[in-house]
Amino acid sequence: MIDFLTAGLVLGCSAGFSPGPLLMLVISETLTHGTRSGVRVALSPIITDFPIIAAALLLLMNLSGYHGILGVLSLAGGLFVLYTGYHSLRAKPVALDLPKEPPKSLRKGVLTNFLSPHPYLFWITVGAPLLTRSLKVGPAAFIAFIGSFYLCLIGAKIVLALAVGRSRAFMGSGVYLWIMRLLGALLTFFALLLFREGVKLLGIW
Image (cartoon, rainbow, N blue to C red):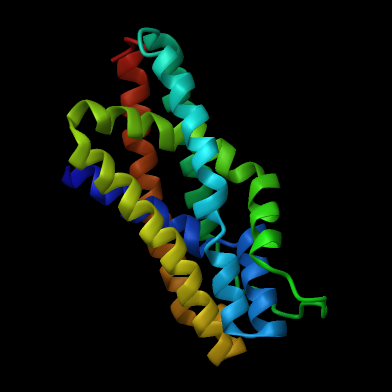
């Protein structure tokens, strides 16, 4: 169970802190309409992700006997995580010169996240395979992974909304950059584990 808890913590923090459409919307809402608006946008993955998770799990369960396909998915997940880790290691200050826009609601955050390709790529190649494995271990492992993932994903975005609400300089600070580089190193290690799992499923090693 510890393995799934750790995976959820690392992947959730990475998804929460990494720049992307949803994070930029969180920052934009915080700067233009206050911290509460940013926090509301940060909560949108709770609504958007679960249909994606259900569909990805259903697909994976139907492929449970096809080790070759699962191996390819694991390798694809490794590449996705490695790519994310690479960009985290090369993180740069985030520009906050955002245009003034009319107020956006939780509905706008839901739409932004639902139309982003990132949740689909993550859950098909990384998240759903981990959830499938956690179910084989037991309900506690399943809850540990998905609970820690969303706690960190949403918690990180809320922390950033609070930090940006207090100081616009935070997203360009050394603290933010070091957080991203640490997450990049952890993601690179996790990608290697996914590659190892992939070659085992393919019978290469």
